[in-house]
Length: 246
View: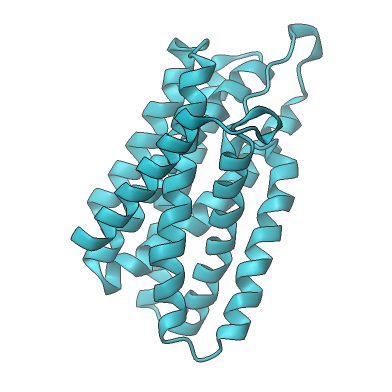
């Protein structure tokens, strides 16, 4: 549990800090990285999270409603986050910088999503260690480009890099905080197994929205791109292998 918390924090922080030093990363490389992350996240949601969720469900219809609700909740969060969770990097001229309140909305939306992720990962770690590692890997692969995109937006919108770094710290701590909060609620019997399943359904809907948006928006006008298709299939194959071996 402690190792997961530290790894999640370190990966988000390190990936965000890269935006300070690699502000002009190759757009082509970045899009391929996003396609890989999106395809992997989509794959583990389909072959791992959802089957496990519905396998012993007492009320699968309610879980389906919460999954659908999570999908549209992510759509709402995207309005506040400017699409950073699936890799959008918005560049503005200095004269058109957004107000700091815009940056606060971005960080708040992404942190809420990350907090929910942490809550789900905590319960998975408690019930099945191998299952936890598959899910942890998926979140890590998704978290790195998300943090990089977030810091790119913050550096663009805020006058001071120190303030942008503080916001990055808040975001990096969100998923670990979700793990610790979920652990506390479970130990104190405030988070029942039924409530946890509804939380997983909600976050699964988030994952489906983020991952499909990444894949669909990775090509201009949704034209076929053999390289991106190959990367997506490779990510899906890795997810299947991880599911079999773990």
